[in-house]
Length: 199
Image: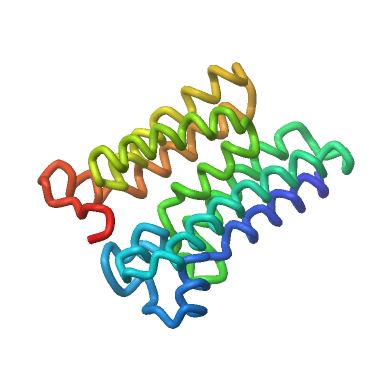
């Protein structure tokens, strides 16, 4: 029980590092909470016009999801941790991103971190969802619409490739949270006022 809880806590702390905030400070940019959508994520950082900062934010948020889950996958068997450790670590790193203890519990929506989680669990599915996101994002120029499409497909894809496994069920709350975190975007989409990428 102790090794499992330690790995899950570590995953949450890794997720709590907001790359949008950290990178913005390094580049001398405004706090991402204070402009655009107010979301500390790569799309909002891109609204500053600093593509390098946005790219580093995207990669960093994705990597933390990947690293936390991949580390749990490798360490859990070595430490004799319970079978639920990896699925719990996946949820924990996502929760850390959304409600980071290091940044006043004001986190991002979790798109890149969710992608990193899926890549760690099953990279072909992660690649497929990335293609879906890219096609939707470049086709409609709306990041939130692409994220919502990927969020809906994520648990379905994991059940398809992994079956009725704990990691598949872990994708359900992550997908629900992804959609819920986009509730303002959904309202904007329905009213035709959603911001295009780069605006």
